[in-house]
Every structure is written in structure tokens, then in C-alpha cells.
Length: 220
Image (cartoon, rainbow, N blue to C red; front, side, top):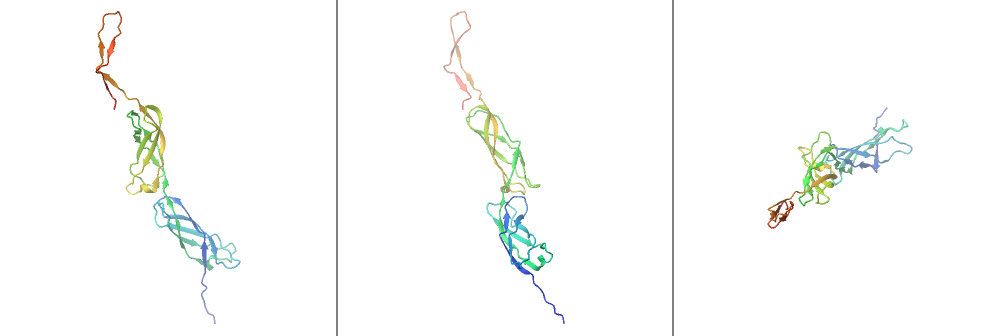
């Protein structure tokens, strides 16, 4: 008589798989490079194992997070070396989602009049490299001249601060500062209450001014 029996796939193990850290892209997808299989029968080889990884959370973090990894075995080049004869359990690895690096274009420094300070207003330009349809809140900027003295084409160090959008999180992004150019105009002063000293006719139009009691305005 004929009897039936089940042949259970041989369980393999894997070591050395790695998760590639990625920039925030709004998805849970992780790229995993499969490691080395152990437990194959002598003389048998399989094709390249594929791996699908899923992060526990889609948001960027300074800390590594868990990545659930599922493997798929692939038949070997020898038709007799079948992936179906083996099994490979998934595992949990770790990887990082880093902040996505943004760019900015079109920021400008408004010219100002000398006020003894280095600070200067900056009009924020347009952000680039946001994910999909994500939008952030209004980016703010602080600008500072290299020194407080009047002059043109002066260096301005600009620092940006990102803000959360209605849904998008600013913490998933990073934006470096930049160096722009700006102008500090000279401050106009006025002098009042200067008098001319009387004189005896001497045939010319020159006069001697008296600055006693004169008032200069515009100096803070």
C-alpha cells in the first residue's frame, strides 16, 4: 500500500543583515541588505535572498528604531535547489530615519539705517525638497551682520527656524543657515540752534558761527 508523509521545509538562519539609514520620506519602508544564510544542505545554494523592512514609525529620530524584516528565499541557479525546500523566519533589526535636508532660495536682507546693532530683518525665501504634498508653517529667520558699522555688501549670517505645518512636523526636516549680503546705511544727523556772530563790515561774506547752545539730533 502507499502511505503519505509530509516533508517539512528545512529552517534556515540568517546573520549579518543590515538596515540602510535613510532620510525622512514620509513612509515606513526600510531598505534591508540580507545577510548570509546558514543551514543549507551541503552542495546546495539558493539565489539572492530578498528582504522587505518596515520601520516602526515613519518620523525622523536621533535614536535607532525597530525594523520588522521579512525575507523571501529564491531558487538557486540549479533547478534542483529549490527555495520551497527551506524556510527562513523574519527578524527585527534596527535602523535610523534622519531628518530630511531642505534647501532654501530667494531669501533677502532688507537694508537698514545704522542703529549700533548687528541684527537685521531677513525675508525668508522658498523651501525646497519637502516630501510630496507636505507643507510646513512659516519659517522664521534671524540675521546678524559681521559688525554694526555702516557699509554696503556686508556679510550677514542667517539662521532659520522651521515651524510645524497643519500635519507635517518640522522635526522631520533640517535647514542649514546661510550667508547673505546686506547694507547698513549711514544715519543722518541734524544740528539746530547754531547762531552767526555779528561783525563789522569787512567786504566779504564769511561769518563766524557760534555753536554754544547748538543741539544735535539723531544720536541714540
